[in-house]
Image (cartoon, rainbow, N blue to C red; front, side, top):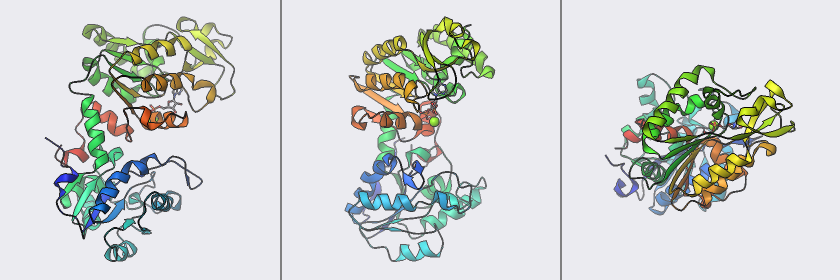
Length: 403
Ligand code: ADP
Ligand code: MG
């Protein structure tokens, strides 16, 4: 089934439209350090404003666990949104309380009202259906339509995502529609060769996506911390590198399945081994079989892929027509261990075809390393949501929009 989109919404001029965004931006001492998620929803908000709607925007920020906590206020987000738009942007200091009610009543077409953090109210994420329904009824009260534009939350069955979409006529916003479109292109009729690159810290987070994608791809490149569980499963020592011992069996099975399917799982041939987990640790490039033969012995810890691996991965990526990348190749937050991630990002910018970066840290990494967003085919704003989509899971927030 197809997602209901903005074009099917009908006339919204003079009406109030409620928009769920994912403005869960990183903050440092109250300052937004990356406004990518706010920018990503501008097209939808501007579309509705141009159509003459009054727009009420809602989002969560962090995990305040159902209580009001000033550290998680959306006030800085409203301020940033006001800078990015040319229309009046108001901010309500509650979500469904007297302040929001009054401000919604006096909102005029062409204006925006941002509600305070949805997760200040425990009903937003309640496991009790009737509580979420009740909260959604208050959120949608007076709204002619609901637009779902927070791709990062479509895998959640929460009041502002699911029950709000059931309460009034609802459609996907431009961001949710385009994210879904791109991810669908990664699962059907993909242009070959199709390469998936996985990294990051936890193999357990990525097993679902590995299992689902293995029959669909030509090769799977694995770097980052998660590679060490594979390397260990193949019988090599890994020093003090990250390893999920309870996943060794399943990882071994994965390797066997890949062999049966004729899919290449390509692991690092060399890694950067450090004396400890620190930005200024001593480090040395080492072949995989020799990790414990470095001066650091069994306390050596692999914090990045090595240059040979980066070159090999880069070649395989550049010769592909479809690439999906999730998870940094090393601890990119420390400059000494960012080279592998940088090399992979660079290779993705050279793909002749569709290149997609998914995952919160991966998206942050490419921005932090200075790559322009436009150098990639697509950068997904939703980490968990994009992985679950590629795992083939049905996402409540998309299902409710007809998908
Ligand atoms: P994403 O959010 O893109 O899905 P993950 O959350 O899976 O990515 O992983 C990101 C984290 O993985 C980063 O904070 C990075 O420092 C860490 N990481 C990558 N490689 C290693 C490694 N070799 N050892 C420890 N941590 C690593
Ligand atoms: Mg992450």
